[in-house]
Image (cartoon, rainbow, N blue to C red; front, side, top):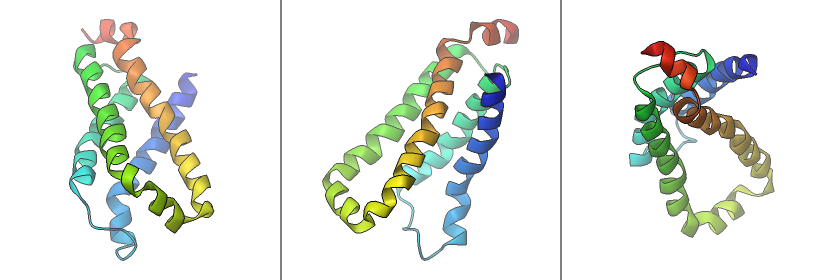
Amino acid sequence: MQIFWKVYFFFWLVLSSSIIWVPYVLPGEIEPWGIFEYVEVVLMPVGVLGLYGFAFSRGFGKAAYWKLIFLVIVVVDFGYPKVCLIEEWPTFIEEMGSEFAPFLLFGFAAVIPFYVALYLYGWRSESIWEVSR
């Protein structure tokens, strides 16, 4: 399973960093950033560091910090965009069409291991935290 997490770390590193460079590659296709995108850019490297720590068994800081970081990332990732999109969701789906469904499913499937890793890193990785003391 450790190999999966190491491979996933590099996959996630490339995927998550695309949020920074895609607006420059496709300047007319992406809407201007709002507060959510700026918050994500701050949280993203922190989450990637946690994923790295979990995948490569390295403790950064304390487990208590990573429990809090996990909660903040989950609240921001699920809270803000979901609240904002609830009103716009029917229009969004209509505009995007059914061609967008595979991308949406891929996005959900790609991000689930990220949340699992951050949860396990903060709550279920005592061996990592014992070594880093």
